[in-house]
View 1 (cartoon, helix red, strand yellow):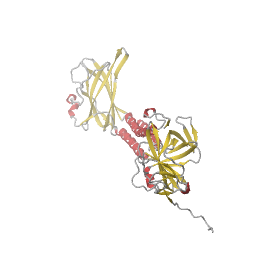
View 2 (tube, helix red, strand yellow):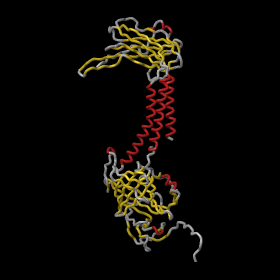
View 3 (cartoon, helix red, strand yellow):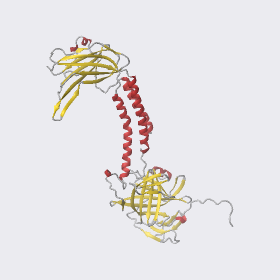
View 4 (cartoon, one colour):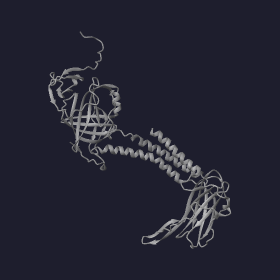
Length: 443
Length: 61
């Protein structure tokens, strides 16, 4: 007699059998979905749909034992759905004779079906089967595909071989079976195409941090530390590059506005100017002091400009800007030299007849200038003028400010580009200087 | 995180540039001498410049 009312939701159960090869107890968790089951003890691959569990394959595990990091039977939540780890396989590709292996964990939920977790060198992906076909554009370099409005670039094409299995599978799994795998990436996602005979399977994976998997499945210890950059690993800096340049651009604009404001508001007040003559034929005391002049306003810089009529000659001037009120002096020396001539290369010249120096942070007060000229003896008279201007904007600080604003933007961009370089160095489309060849299909 | 750092960093750079301009800083090297004798005004030769006795190399091509 049938009961009326709503059908109760089934709770996940397990079915226990014994291995016909070694007698060990077998656990089948995916019920009628299981097509093959691998004995955990003797590693016989058994036909799960045969009531007598016919042995399909036995493989040597003495040198191939590869225990899963997440034990079979472990349950955990992925996207708010509880899944149970029911199968585990290792798959291997060979590139230039070197084997590269990754692990696949088959997850099962009686209502949602199957999905996978893949792991390579500590990099994890949450993988599910695609429900609709992507559009492939094979003409590009690298070829691309479009799926749900997103473009994926082909990363690698290789023949993958199953090299270790454990647990149960909804297909006829065999150690040694191979398929051609083509990966397309658009971090943090990747789409994989698997071709085995006439069967083609498309799957989409999303990069997941190992610690999130560990947390979801309540696995003890720490997940393996990721090694290198994985093909769909999101760059920790990719989103920052746009942000950093936007911010740097904004601040550069502010810096330009600041420069305009300082140039507009600075007084650039000429406080002293005088012309002098230095007679190099004279042996008397060359030093002298100027008339007194006043620096008004706030503490500011003072630009001293020397204009000397030197022609294939030089003059060196020891300057001391002396505050008569405080007896404090700013002491510095400047050379003005200008040489020119003709040789086999034509006209040449060195130096110039004008020199400027900025004396920093000069307080207001009454000042005079001590000047002591030097030059070669007996070169006649040298005419020169000295001009002092206070509160002169310094373009150098704006230049340094712009450089300082560009440094973090440049550094983050470089880090991001380096990350992408490392990613693509492992692909079939590696940059020329990465040391990897464009292998196309590896086997 | 980086955004906040860059905002603070950018404001610090603008602040430093503004301070440098307002306070009249310079990248030139100038020595400050304290207590210059008042006699220098009448006897300029009595002052010994830090940069005195310059040995000039007459270069040229």
